[in-house]
Image (tube, rainbow, N blue to C red; front, side):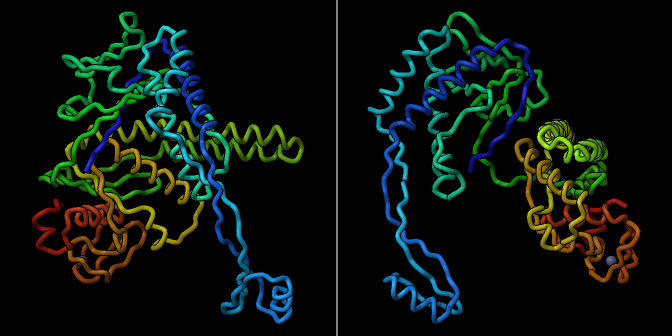
Length: 411
Ligand SMILES: [Zn+2]
């Protein structure tokens, strides 16, 4: 299995023109392929339902429609036509496409390999559009490139003596980045630099390698809470990371939104515009903070396997629909998602991680005022610490027991 990690480097090179032109050639590639898509009409049988009544059945018979009766419903069948896109990808077509784009690109000073990279990206965008279209998620509308980036394929960069060199203009302009002084350098020493995405102010480096067998890595379990991430790990014991700043951002923007909402009746158009702006700012703030936070965690616990509760399952056991909690849940998922790019993450079933006594494994506990009290072994422990130990143990594949506790858990 392939394992991938992404790291960012900020830069201050002026690459705006390259990115603008790349975006333009990428859109040209999409346009060209789009115009050559062959739409195959296919008949598919659909149905709608009507209630089962004598009158309906009579009517349908009269109209000569095909139908079946199941339970209390009548399923009425009809033939619909669906247009299935076939994206051209023959070698000949690709050559034509390349020549067409190259004619434009030649007028720029930039390396011709950017055209190949744009073609690859265009195919990637269109095939993901196609998949969504076939699933009924997207309409039959040509994808438009809005994000500013340039994908740098491997013929456009090389790494030598710890330095990354990107070709912008052959024998003219190269961008140089030291990698060996970056915090992540040691962590990807034997990895392959697969792909680079160049943005106006940053570079995203994607490293890949074949996944190794599970080794002897240390394990840390994380319990997610509104104000804190509570960890328990090998060697380090209990760890607490504050999420208050994240919470503060949500409160600030929540208040801003409330103020604008009062304007909604007076000037709905302007208010909606403002609300959109505020939400966007909030998202950006939250995203930036999550990147910072996860980078810090990845640095501090780089050689650990990080264990989290499966937060998609979480709602099954915890149906509380408190507003704050739902916002936090969204952030937690994002934290785990981003961390997956930086460290090894495993997710475990969240069932009973709060209620189980982490010392003896009993469910005969009382959770009150932030403390878990075990009625069997008498343990009294912080609720979040108890949960993080349970998550840590699950991550190690261990059941809580006195023996395990005495061996592994510091007290
Ligand atoms: Zn106990």
